[in-house]
Image (cartoon, rainbow, N blue to C red; front, side, top):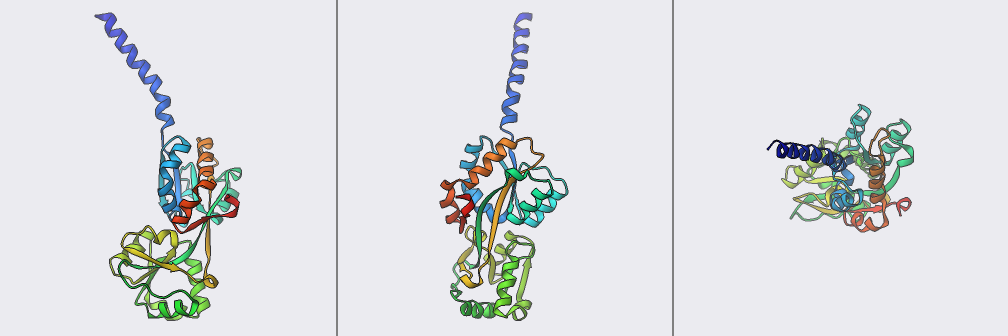
Length: 258
């Protein structure tokens, strides 16, 4: 009886010892990612996890908010943010410079409530008329697309005319939800943030002469313990084979990533 008990106890100990590496191996890779890349990452997540060999623990937000958290010391393994932010974090020593990889870029577009008539925004004059006629407009106050939206309004000469009907949102979810439920007429933001939004239909991009593109990059934290797995994720997000996933979400792989 005592021998049987000792054998069972030894088996439990052995199981615990051999199980530890497996648990560590399957711990989630901590990823901080911009909302502009969310649709692409969500689409590719199963494939990315297979290629990395472990689950991804992803937190999405605006690049500005995520960068503040990184600067404040939040631990992470990989960051997927605007190229300017990634470059700045690499320069500051928060991201390993040799791990940085260019990903995709996305233009700015317009969305309206699902089922509503799509306004004409095909030309600068048409977009101008549409924005002047709109009852309300929304975009994220700290969103990466904000500078391009403000530039567009300036080029059209209507910044002052639409100022009173602008509803600044705190997040992408807040902006698209306000359009989906009819509280705001139009959302202006990255195309990749409009296409997956429930209750919102994509009208189209800004005309070419008014368009601006937000570029995204990824990098591995300088202090990351999982540097090799982080590098695998960056490579998987840049692989030529994922180009269709980018295109389906209104983005494109940059030339550097092809």
